[in-house]
Amino acid sequence: MRIKSFRSVVKNYRAVFFDAFGVLKNHKGLIPQIEKTFEYLEQKGIYYYVLTNDSSRSPEELARWYQEKGLKYITTDKILSSGMLAMEYFKTKISNGNAVAYLGTKDSAHYIETVGLKTIPVAEVDLNYLDEIESFAFLDDEGFNWNDDINKTVNLLRKKNMTVVVANTDINYPVSKNDISVAVGSLADMVEKIIGKNFIRFGKPDAQMFLLAYERALQDTQLRRNEILMVGDTLYTDIIGGNKFGLDTALVLSGNTLPEMANIKISSSGIIPTYVCNSAIVE
Image (tube, rainbow, N blue to C red):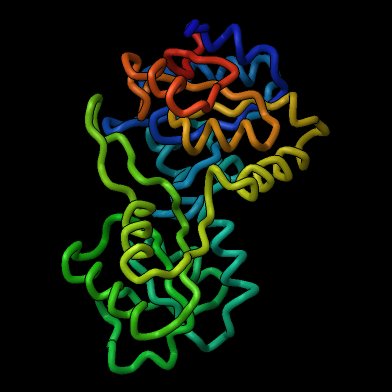
């Protein structure tokens, strides 16, 4: 496995799709010196977008986080999140007047409420009165009681047959240099197995997520898929998703994939990035 500098890689592309966690930020905040990358991209006229499975907050709030940390380049129009795909689904599939129950924070319910639908956190669901609930959404891994509300979710979905949407397919995310935490995708996998039903998932590695970003990039400039680089820290979402969509991919070792494990994971999974870089920092 040959490690390449990010500068030597990114200079060959006209646009870049960045994952967020483990690439641009971590448990401490922004990855140090990541602003140098965006200064370089601006200087070279390379387009860039943040392609994230984070459905915990609206694109406006996600962009505000970067702005408050001093990364002025990440504006709302640069954010493409899995929550946006879930929002479009609810807009077309759920009847007005009906409600969507959800697991997550109040902020994460933004994507459903934006299209005019009523939302009910699972903690407030009355299992004896489910007539108005038409669908259920897994939105975030915070904002609820893990024991009571996950059990309640299981029983809700056993009692009433309904469409279930998973707005974030991530199964884990890094919380420190060496540790990870359970993400909402893992919770959905567990509940799906318990009740024996299939859920609808939005986010990487699904092609729909990359198509959303590609169509957004085409609003700025005409470009082919082989002119775009996907940068991520996870083989099973960022890299395989980019590979399948026809993009070149760069695995960075600043997040989920530890440097000492990268070669083993690539070999055992068969998911081969175009490049491997220590980070997405242009030095």
